Length: 343
Image (cartoon, rainbow, N blue to C red; front, side, top):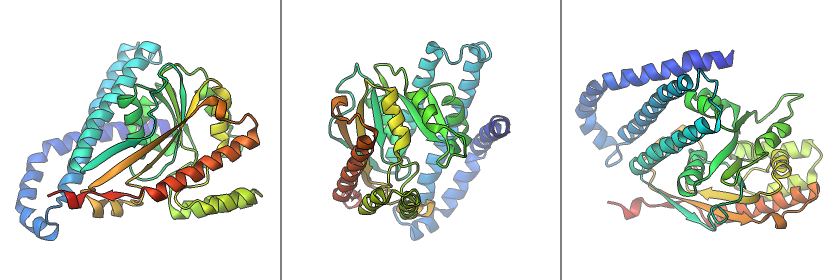
């Protein structure tokens, strides 16, 4: 039923909303011009509404155009008969990269963001697949990671993401045509998520990047407390104590990541941390900060396969040690405000 609602109601409604916005855009411009003196007095030099509005219009426009293209590809593939073939998969990866390039560059300009990378890039061994293990916090971190992997490093991501993201029509359609898995952060009884993740991580090509967020959700102080309580409920007191020592990250849930390690024995691991927007925990936080004037720093650590323990318990210990390293790095690289350096 959810599938039918998303495809037959949400997707057409998004296209219709986008068309309505563009048809009535002259009216909105007149209203904006009339109100601009008042806006300038209340928010001098910020233009929050215009910046956020333009990013939203751009996003809706990109999504609507892409939905039309995706429908055309479905027809061209024989009404979906060959839609998951290597040829059409390559087209879909190109579409994802193109969407990210257009949207990310414009959002970075309008919201006044800089992105800086540190550490060995994940293209040191372009003929070898990688498992990318990333912290999860702040708005748009997964988009930034996908943009970097595809546009900068030429990787084709296979991503594990929350099932709630499937309500975005483009994400829903695109990621069901290329290797990806929608999973629940709190699976029901009988759901074998580790097997699904292992299947996705199997048979990686040399330019593939399997991407997983072991925390299971964006960091918030409340989720951190719940993650610690969950460890204690499971009788993992030692892990709970270690999680309490990590202030800026959630305790990782190792099951899915360990399943991927077993399914991709030839892949190296890349740990990713980032900071810059992680203090923005709500829509209100984002609104108050626009334009953001921040530098996003992404830190990459490449871990050769031979450095990863073979025993499961040792791997869990190894993952928690890496998460402690990421937590310490975040503490040393707090968000840098660039507004003072701009006119």
